[in-house]
Amino acid sequence: MLSRTADHLFWMARYMERAENTARLLDVNYQTSLLPQTADAALNGWKGLLSISELGSAYAQRYGEVDARDVMHFMVRDEENPSSIVSCLGSARENARAVRGTLTTEVWETQNQTWLEFKRVLAAGDFLDDPSETFEWVKFRSHLSRGVTVGTMLQDEAFHFLRIGSFLERADNTARLLDVKFHAVESEFFGPASGNAEGHGEGQEYDFYHWSAILRSVSAFEVYRKAYRNVIRPEKVAELLILRDDMPRSLAACMNEVVLNLRMVANEQSQDTLRRAGRLRADLRFGRIDEILATGLHAFLTQFLDRVGTLGMGISRDFLVPG
Image: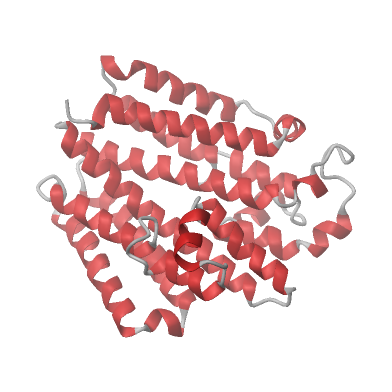
């Protein structure tokens, strides 16, 4: 496969996944902002959302002070923000158009229709009437895109590059979410005085909506109940979203898919990249949440993001950059 074609497929999938993750974060933050809370708590939620996407500086340059309405505009419909939903869907569509002949008709039509319909939604002002409905629509279109890909495409190199892009992006987004949300309360629950999260029943009850919001942002609230069958505990949330490979959006599950699909397209040049991916997957497969918390969750996730970034550069070097 031409490296240019692989590049377009890889980034088409990444941009679609990024649009979905942005919609998830915005939806949960919007729903949480409607709950009774102090103005500072609500403001910190929006600041945290910008921090997850590393867009705090870009937002400040354009809008100044953090305001809920401006953040929503910036993250949904601002075409000058490359990580906004409209920009991500547009980029996914343009990458799909560039490799139209490689995709099935159903995959192309799904991408194209998603872009056109979202532009109509923004033009009609429907987003302002019910943001949550718009975010649900974006998530549905992303699910549809993946489903059509799995259901109609030949499982050849094109398919594998799409999958690599999707799960590498998902791993990056899940890690960023965990890092920002947990870092805000890490000193309370995982500080040196506590050793672990035991004995903080009152704090856990007070922060029920905080932890449930984290789970809901990755569609894991019901999964958590099924897997642990008890109250929401911070260390169990971390375990579910990091180490449980039966949780579709966990770091372990994402790396399983990345390694599986990398193996299918591997060549002599990519052996080091495959080794790095395999080692990262092994660290998650054989890791223990108590060991991660003992050394520091923030440090672990920061290192994970660095390793995912290095892995992404390796994939670009081995497969995607035209020679």
